[in-house]
Amino acid sequence: EAQVTQNPRYLITVTGKKLTVTCSQNMNHEYMSWYRQDPGLGLRQIYYSMNVEVTDKGDVPEGYKVSRKEKRNFPLILESPSPNQTSLYFCASSFARDWENIQYFGAGTRLSVL
Amino acid sequence: AQKVTQVQTEISVVEKEDVTLDCVYETRDTTYYLFWYKQPPSGELVFLIRRNSFDEQNEISGRYSWNFQKSTSSFNFTITASQVVDSAVYFCALRSGNMLTFGGGTRLMVKP
Image 1 (cartoon, each protein chain N blue to C red):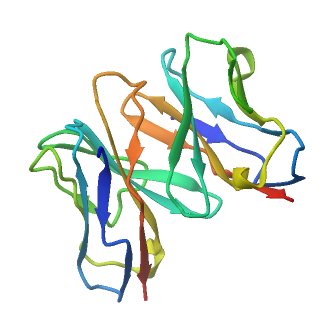
Image 2 (image 1 turned 45 degrees about the horizontal axis):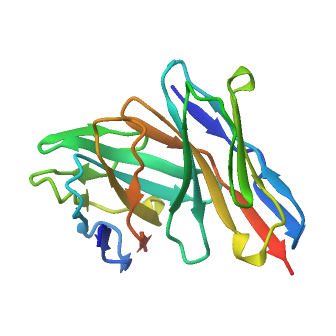
């Protein structure tokens, strides 16, 4: 089954404790992306990757890191989480060839930073 | 910079009513793609439709229809004869270049 898998689905942590949210896709997609969803703001792009070892900032990259060492994986790293990073996070992937391609989303990770 | 605006933050209707969700976008690119996604209470994002900037033909899919008008930079979504299962947050999105930009979402509540 084609899917984008995020883990964990729920996470509660404390300020300053490094964490990683994993994202994996099995569709051989080149393009992967991370978004955060906040009430009234919709989804905002954090980082995206056009292919292995190619990453770029989205609209709200501050406080986040990503890496793309393998095509299927695109982890989101919070080196020192802060309460303003409490949010719902989505990973997405698509083929990069054409911009009309649909992005497939993971189920989301709800993060609370205390 | 590109922008997507959904001015309706919440809409409440009674079942069987028709409802239109508005979406207005801004971009300097001549080639772009527009999307609608649905987010039901369970939280996942479900793709509904895409439209490219060269295709202004309206589309109907069952009870759903979309009206794309380049002249007004709008891509509105209508649900005919709404049902309780249509209750969700609906997002309009614009893809231009490497970025996908979402509107703030419209929460639709359909009451029985």
